[in-house]
Amino acid sequence: AQSVTQLGSHVSVSEGALVLLRCNYSSSVPPYLFWYVQYPNQGLQLLLKYTSAATLVKGINGFEAEFKKSETSFHLTKPSAHMSDAAEYFCAVSEWTGFQKLVFGTGTRLLVSP
Amino acid sequence: SQTIHQWPATLVQPVGSPLSLECTVEGTSNPNLYWYRQAAGRGLQLLFYSVGIGQISSEVPQNLSASRPQDRQFILSSKKLLLSDSGFYLCAWSGEGSPNYGYTFGSGTRLTVV
Image (tube, rainbow over all chains, first blue to last red; front, side, top):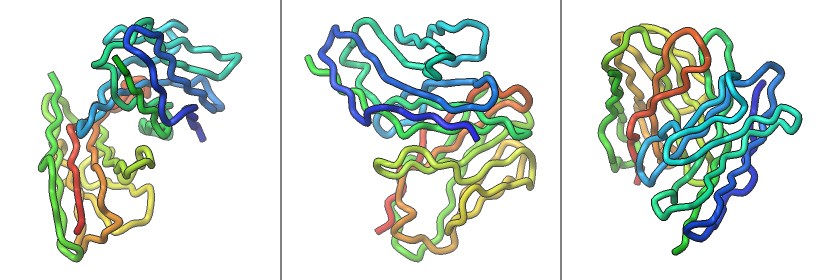
């Protein structure tokens, strides 16, 4: 079964600093990987997804993620944090068993200080 | 375009009372539908999924049930709520077929059982 591990339940950065949220996956087949963002008391919004077309994936709000097969990683980055980036971020891997099932990591809360 | 509606947004219910949460999708047909629960500090847990009318699969044994009376309607129910049923409930849909579609989530229901 596929799984993802998010390192760090909380990450704190200053406004303008680099954002790096870590995600490692475990998959026996080429994975489909996703990053979602969740603002307080809201549903999850898709930031970006990797579907094997390109290893560097660009998403919304200036985020991007790089798929590294050798490291089984799909880390999320943003060059310069903004206060509005404060939210919880979830990495997910798609498991296909006749239908699509997303397996989520436990989430990383990003805190941005002025 | 496709949209997903979930209601109510918040709910406070006494222990032992019934529950009904509704989710509807517009702009697509034969979606895969999902109910997730997000408990504090515990990430996202898949509760139920459905690939068609009347077809419900449960991921974990629990005090809840789900039904899909129409193609784009998914209902989460309980006959008697427990304190442990408190949490944030999210409905989601994905297109049938390829696993790279990802999910689209509803805005969630915050359930507090008192």
